[in-house]
Length: 555
Image (cartoon, rainbow, N blue to C red; front, side):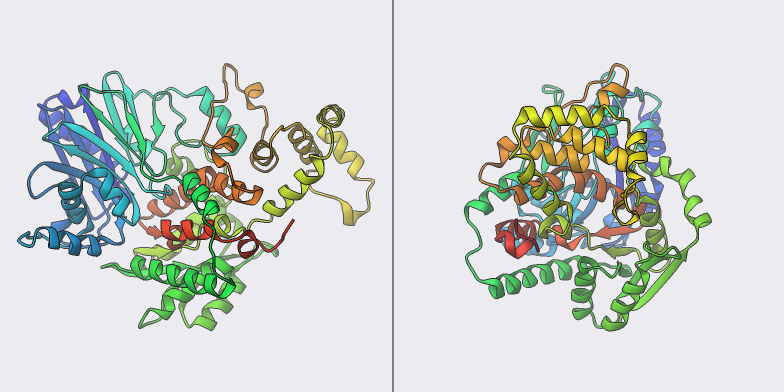
């Protein structure tokens, strides 16, 4: 795992010493992403420069130093991530060019050789991994930025005053003397709705996030970023729905186990100590179980607990660890320890982020880093296999609401919202204690506003994801822009409601909230996290399964 930064255009045309110094400053602002090594590369004539911080995981020798130049000298890359099938790619490349020599065994070197033989898009489609990279083609003078299929690794970019900035985190861009950090009020509207800022936006004007499964190109001749998708969750789901899995339940279990086992095996490859997060739930326990079954010694597992009843998962994790025979470490967190993290959160996330579990995620990452450099995670299982209770709740609520004429729903919503949330809370106080609901007034307003949705996808977004349904009313001069999940029903023809919810989550909530949270928390302590469930082959297979194989409740 690493961190990258760079600029193209006017800023890169400054004196070489000045450019190199600024690249170092920008890269050093994300030292925690790569404490083991650093490097810069700059071509003043072509006005392009890269900075890099390295966390050495595969080939910890100097042969893995970055930025790295390809064997022919055509390509220069700054790379963040891991290519899990790079050994297979290297073997295939050896058959293409039997006389090729390798400087080391890093996946970055394999990636560069693959670009030489197959080009960018074919290499991306052949690759299995999590990554973000910047690639300069010295022959064609084209800059390419790319991000992995599901968005495990971040990548920001944008033009400002004739300079095209790009990097792993916003703090790296902000470290440039030329960066202008003007808050984007439209993005602020998105934050108030979602609790995070979804791609392709960021909190700053002119700076965006590259969407998962995409790459872009920029050149002097074509300065407008040309963004293209090489893989799409929505397209994969539609194709899977049109060609559903044909076997029985036993066949599905066997094939899924084989795919997850393969993914875990590939993601356990590292030249540094490796462990796994263990919450005691189904997802993390599955990953740890398959990791332990393929390990010759006990896997190191980590969990944190809380003394408050109802929030503590450590006891379940301990039982799973004992059953599997892992080398387990747990830490019970006090309120003071949790609160001590709060001042560091703005520096971790660099833009507004409101996920309530960002503190425990940081604490378990910090615990794991004391023992390992890489940790497996069970994230993604809920989105792939219907684990969220909001799925059946949303379907059932919409089933009932859709029977009510639209004008009746609108009048009912107007009546419900005419009563203040505090008054609704007072009314709820008269109910028997067993029927009372926390924040009843706010929940009533939220549901009432969602009642007016015309389509199920809009209802799901408004009811389950929107902290505020009309954020423009709270942001002076702000206007909520479209996202990958607004009006998304048109791109999901053939999907049922469960499938649409999962796709919506995979498009936005997973990459922009869950994966962003894990990446920033782990990278703040120089820990690489890997998510075996998010191998694209598992995602595509899961999408092909009948709903009853993935969701426990049928409606």
